[in-house]
Amino acid sequence: DNLTQLIWQKVPNLSALSWENAIAYAESLSLASATDWRLPNLKELQSLNDESLTNPSANTTFFPTIGVHNYWSSTSVQNQPVNAGFWNTQFGITTLGLKTATNYVICVKGNPTNLAVKSIDLKSNICVFPNPFSSKINIENALGDEYFELYNQTGQIFFSGKNITQHDFSYLMSGVYFLKINKEKNYTIKIVKN
Image 1 (cartoon, rainbow, N blue to C red):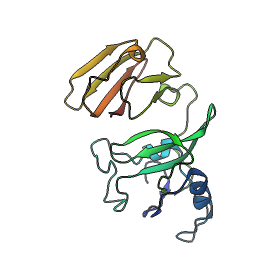
Image 2 (tube, rainbow, N blue to C red):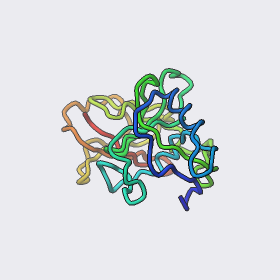
Image 3 (tube, one colour):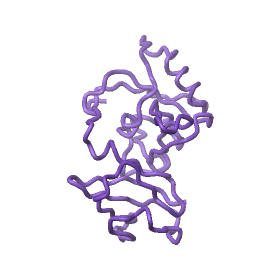
């Protein structure tokens, strides 16, 4: 990957593994004369996502066998030790799931140059969950003065305001939506309604 200076496993693991087994698989992988493979973090996995694609949401020219699966990341949340992050290639969303569940693995090697975590970066601090959602959207680590807009793929706005966590979205049709978070910078994420 020329942008991030990461080297990706071109053909992902062919069977789903628990998170612990995915870590072990990555650490023991020997491929292309290299043994320094690892499970990517959530930001690294997101760098493979192409917002213009679904089913899968990744460029199949580079990853022809990626398919529509969930892919484990090494990202774990301190206050939720039973969960780890994964990337869903159906819609290109990232979310948390039980470490005992089975997901697929695509390994990476190298040190990222453009995916460094900035401690004050709004994008790295706010967590939107669950994704997919059914009625409520929860926001973690928000400062309280963010302005939110929820809209569909055609640009139709369903919510605009500050208190998005108090709103019930059960009336929305299932599908892909975009949540725009306005603060000092605008940040838009793709979320899925069940």
